[in-house]
Length: 138
Image (cartoon, helix red, strand yellow):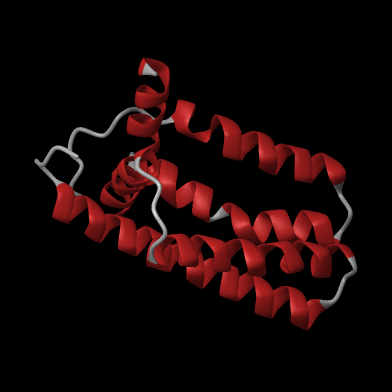
């Protein structure tokens, strides 16, 4: 469990969060061009990303709060609006991957954009969740 805690803290570095979010278009483009080496590189980056960046000195940035809020939220699953946002993100992300594979530009763009919006909305809700729960025990 201590290892996962360190993983979350390092992922809370704003650079880690921002560069992982920025992988969306790269993943879709690498699938669009059927470049499986690029797909593997993007997936590898997503996995090792939190290990590359150090733990932030402060957790006061929006992305840091979002990541730490998600950590706390996932420790206590509940049926709420945040779960709906996560579900909607997945519901749009999967068709965006399929559309990229089939080289369907507009569906890929629309589903990819919606997935991106739902992801950012989820991160925002997690930042709010973190602020509300900061300093309190669960």
